[in-house]
Length: 118
Image 1 (cartoon, rainbow, N blue to C red):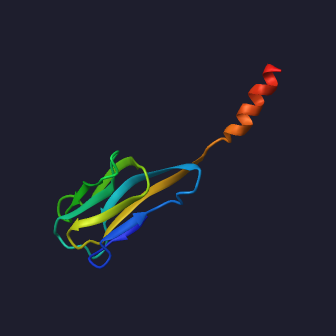
Image 2: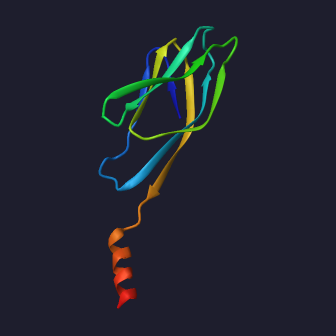
Image 3: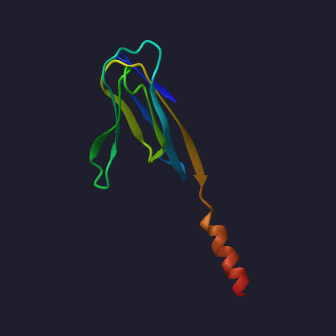
C-alpha cells in the first residue's frame, strides 16, 4: 500500500524491466485516513496506452462526509503505474496486492518436444 498526502501527491510502482516475469498489480481499496478534511480527494491512475502515450484516469473521488472509502474489487493494472492525488490534501491510503508470474523457460519445453518425437 501507499499513502498520498498534500506533501506526497504521487507514488509510482515500478518493476525491473529486465525481469522476465509477468507482474500484476491490483488495487483493492482507496480510503481517507485519520486527519482528512471534508473535501473532495480525487485519486488518478497514470499509465501508458498502447501507443506509449501517458494517460491519467480518475479511479476515486472521496469525501469524508459522504464517501470516505471505495472498494475497487482488485482493479488490475500493468506496471509501471503512478497513483496521483489530483485534488484534495488527503491523506488517502491505497491498498492492494502485487503478483509475480514466472514464465516457463521455453528452451526446456522445446527440448522435451524433441525427445518425445525421437
